[in-house]
Structure formats: C-alpha cells, structure tokens
Length: 133
Ligand code: ZN
Image 1 (cartoon, helix red, strand yellow):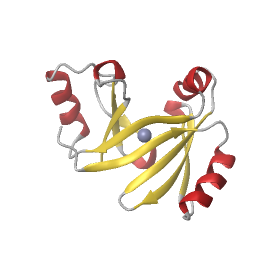
Image 2: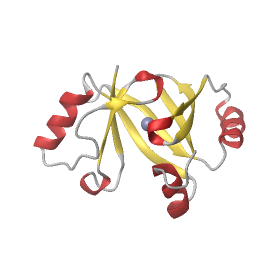
Image 3: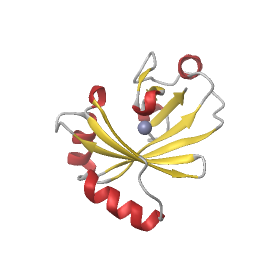
C-alpha cells in the first residue's frame, strides 16, 4: 500500500469543545475545521501539524463506533491514517496480503477524502485508515 505520509492521527474525545480548547493550547495552533461525518456518527475537529493532522472525534451516537470505543476504552488514540495514492487500490492490496478489511471499498470521510479501514485484528492491534484525495 506504500503510504506517502501519515495523513492524520484520530483521537477520541468525550467533548469536542473541551478537546479543541485543550489541543489549541498544547499545540499552539487553531483548529481549522469542525465537520460532522453522519455516516460515522461523529463530529470531528482538525489541527495541522506539518503535513500531518490531528483529528479529534466526538461521538454523536452512543451506539456508533466512537461511542462504543469511549465506553470501552475511554478517551485516547483511536486510529492512524495513512495517505495513499488510491484508497481502493490500497484496500485491495491489503486484502491480497491477507489483511482483514473493515471497508471493502472506500467511502467518503471528513474533508471529502476517500477512506477505508483495516481491521485491527490483522494489524497488530492498531486501527488503520487509508485515505486518498
Ligand atoms: Zn480518521
């Protein structure tokens, strides 16, 4: 799948407002985007650090993926997203390499990117996201 860089690191937070003010303070940079991704039942907030982003994720539904994550594990790192040329091609390559996929095909994520997730069972316990423009 040969990623070009780490696109973003996803961090689950209980409150986006509190998360934003905390990260603005420690990163010394303003959140540049708040976006709801209905499909994933989250509200997201983004910070730019070089070419890598920090994505804060607040659940809009306790039954959604972030709602369940917060319930089980509490706040913290949720996933790492790699930038790739083409998310669908990379998902296929991962599948051929024997990695279990959460998304067989890419879907639209925040910022209009094409995204797809690999199952953490197959990736040493790390939830990995692949994204392309
Ligand atoms: Zn993400």
